Length: 291
Image (cartoon, rainbow, N blue to C red):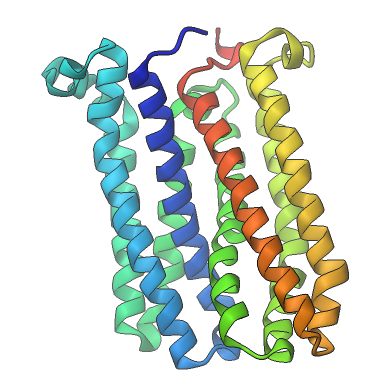
């Protein structure tokens, strides 16, 4: 796999796009299911972070076209090549970018307005998150269920990833028992969400691989194996939080709160690496079942 500087830029930009969009969408979900446990100032602090993520996601989405065109041309001149830009735009990326931006702006407007309108925010967030399921390898796969499975997968990723930032904020603002109640609510819902994440992700990977031997004989499969290792690390951190730290926090242990902060930072780091690998998979390595 020969990589150029613009290939690297395309992968990095896509990872940023994944991180910002899914974190923003998941943060909206967090505000929805934790609303009754949050103080107004907590909601405001979380919402401000979400607005920044929305701005980053829209900017990264807009930059995807020119950077992808430069990657295709192997030169910066590709950013101004109308033919390449049109190819990227009409290849589905343009439609996905419009849908993504619309969903994020709807979620932001609903949050800013508050009141009954805030329930439109999760709908907009879901639209933005699932925009990734309708382009790329997944959209082109022969199995018609693949986009639906990927939609389930990215919604579950958003739920998990989007809770990390708000929990980090609340770990600095709330007393241990109050924080414990929030973490417990997240943990109860997360059990079903993680099961859906793993099942849908495994099904999509199986469809795209086309055969188990592709895990070690193809670039796509080898990158997928690296991703699986990091996912296992993330699950281990999450299990430690749920089984060891959260019960201590519920009991009022302030030292466990410090441990949770460190664990959240570790989860964010590992999640970032997973998104970077995913960006490489979807940008540089062709799915074996489609070759």
